[in-house]
Length: 273
Image (tube, rainbow, N blue to C red; front, side, top):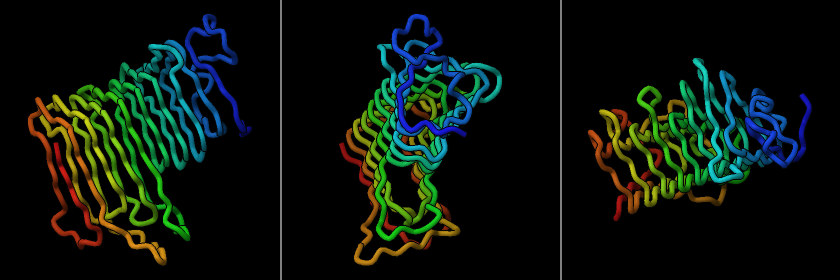
């Protein structure tokens, strides 16, 4: 496929009212979007996608940004529509609202240095997975995931947000949820003997339907990654929950573990007001 080295594009269902160019409906860009490196997509007004997937693989420096006061991305149709970002770096989603009428999922698979801010996800399942890199690095890589001022409202047939951390010691990931609001379905965090730090700050979890509002599960990695970094001491991992609220749920906060864990990783869970 052709490669787009850099650029900016405007996206809207009504490009006739958009003065900037080039402007096209989202359908024009959907499908395999892996050629859009170093690109900004500006969303103006409503952008609809019906029965299509948007797939980004091995891309860098891509931003999806809502340009006006109420930009929205609508998923329509009877089939599942998803946005998938795989093996990519420096992904930003800001000032955007995602709505769906049937099935919708946003899936990040080994997407590093992701920043999602000032956005609403209504009826989209948000799934984030971290798995080992193909080869070990000479130095310990550090990556980040930041969700700031994000509102998640899951519909009853969607399922909650899933965050699976299963990369072993092939890299370190720092995760920050700052002013995250999650309603109606739980946030599920699964930790499989991996290097990470997880900070939840001034966030709220409420109205989980017949479930817990926030669940942490510790599991054993059956094939752990064993990278070595001379001169580096791997410190304990921290899960910090600070100034956050859990209310109007069937159950509040849950921590579970597999029956047997070998104890190769140390975790400290801190909950403070």
